[in-house]
Length: 205
Image 1 (cartoon, rainbow, N blue to C red):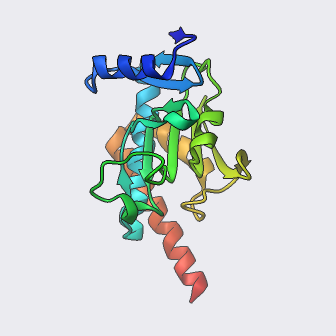
Image 2 (tube, rainbow, N blue to C red; image 1 turned 120 degrees about the vertical axis):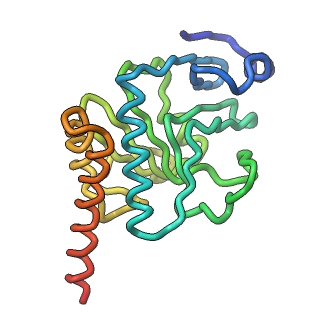
């Protein structure tokens, strides 16, 4: 659902009225408000990719803070968005145990968009304005990785947060989950990450 000519005060009043216990997600761009109801075909890849990121963090033994569909909003920019999932990686220590509010706190280091249906808003513009350094977009069994460079997203073949990760292999694990199950797919992904890290370790010795 698209609502136009929605002022920031009206947007805030609407969000306050419905509260946090709602199924739909929002994107707001200078007076245009999009309300979107996540579908099963949308949520399953999103949640699997989030589990893959947790798996990578475990294998690297680093701290990663997943904040789900955290509402990211900037009144001064008249923009707001809820990613399907987002993570603090490089800046995790800066926001640990904090109530995150932009722009006083940094934006998430990585946001995920799982697009089953086409959005009516140019979400990349919103993410870029908010300063999210990395964006993963999964659609039609393809995972695309974008990095924010000079205020615009450029599509690259590797992740800023996890440069060793073969991102083109991730859709295959998502497809495997339809046959072997989600937990089995995560275990297979973990084995692949261990294989890559061991290979890198042997190369550096």
